[in-house]
Image (cartoon, rainbow, N blue to C red; front, side, top):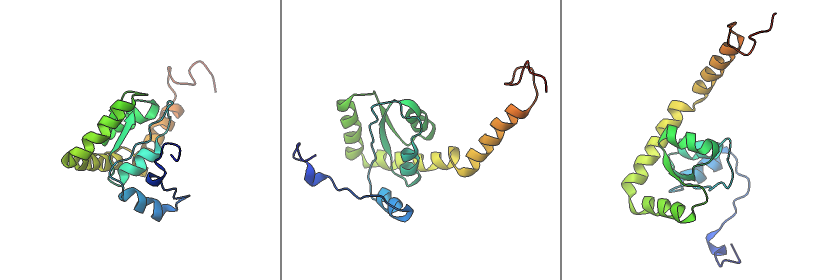
Length: 143
């Protein structure tokens, strides 16, 4: 950032505890962490959207599914810096869209990624593994 003359635009906040992280996220207009690889988890997206912050991300790994499922952001093509900048700019110039995506993300996280939803899905998966059938993972094995 210093070499680009933008060090005044950057402020390192260190490691934040939960209340400070929530406060930090709620003060953002938009979050973008443009992954350069297929990010498998995207927890940072869920945290931002759970606080009503829309996201702008490349179509990579788990990020794509999270943004599509929640509706809480804009996806751009991977490694397309102009597209990324344009998507962020589109939110800056359209406060109504910014607000709508923030609300969609918040609702989408609650609907699809709450602890209750994840626990129910885990039970579903475990149940399908434990249930004897002819096509499951234990097919062909005797007990």
